[in-house]
Amino acid sequence: MSVQPPSAPSQPSAADPSVAERHWKRNLTVCVFGAFTTIVAMTLLLPFLPLYVEHLGVSDPPAIVQWSGVAFGATFLSAALTAPLWGRLGDRYGRKLMLIRASLGMAIAMSLIGLAENIYQLVGLRLLAGLLGGYASGATILVATQTPKERSGWALGTLSSGIMAGNLTGPLIGGLLPPLIGIRNTFFLAGGVIFLTFLATLFLMKETPRPRRAAGAPKPVTVRPWDVIPDKKPVVTMFVVACLVMFSIMSIEPIITVYLIQLHTKNVTLMAGLVMSATALASVLSASRIGKLADRIGHWKVVIGCLSAAAVLLIPQAFVSNEWQLVVLRFLMGIALGGLLPCIAAIIRHSVPDIVAGRMLGYSTSSQYVGQVLGPLTGGYLGGHFGMPIVFIATCVLMAACAAVMLVMRPVSVR
Image (cartoon, rainbow, N blue to C red):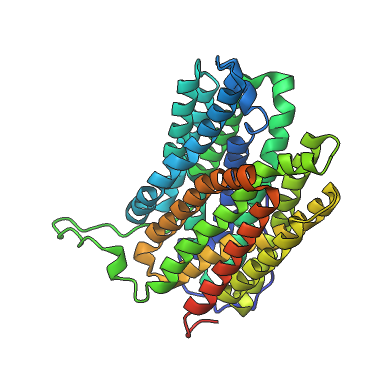
């Protein structure tokens, strides 16, 4: 998978360019490939997760639904708890090492999921996958810190395209492979593909060497991250916005199938997949372009604009009369969503010193995971008790509030 950057004005040649400056394009390519394969592996189980839960001995239909939700959310829960730790260790020992750990750990965890004998082992192994994994979030940190700042928006947008492509492709592969090779072999194959990511990360990625402490030199003073950040408001604002963005995205997911049933849709499963894929496809197409736009006009402006556009597009989704209207509106909304997370990461990166960048981006990732856990629970509750349209309206209000908060909190010194 090759990645070519857009043309840019020629920069003055340095006499001794750093490793990061010489290899950032190759690093980006490896990160896009690694994020894509690991996200595919983590999402391919969505179409057949209830079947696997039933295969592991759960027979009561409500219990199958409940355990499927627990197993799915377990990975995000453990990932949210450990993301700051991996970010901190990445600051201290190197981001490449964290990606090597994540790819090898996920390869092992995914293979072990194929060996699960009961539902408790499945949930435990899903927790393990979140604990040991985090390749996509680690790749975001490496790209944000090892890419020239003037290209960071485009690079993070390209990486986001790979992540969204994984979210788009994973469920499709998960629907095709189990009938052909079996559920357990599907997990074994996923583990093997992630092992290829481990090899690519180990042998192809180059990171700027971290300075070594001279023998006898005193240990460096422990850095308290919040003490070295000159202006904390933009960082805290981005944490909140990152959480609310993922909350808003994921709050819609549990109700799409039921919403389509209420619209008297034929072949509901196919159309539900099409609606979800439309959003992911649009995000894939728009992420790098919006990132490039943000590099030119300013990341704050782009995030505020994307949040506002998404809020406006949610209103007609609550009142559609057929499934194709929903497909078109979700596609348009995906265009707006594609630019949000890369720009949020870029704003955080530009607001903190290099020494704590990994830790702050790790906190941002944890904020996103919190949104991914709470969003489906809230959307399902609102949809079940108050009807499907209220979910879209509530999400619209939430995104509009995010845009307003960003407008108020925007530093005067940034574009």
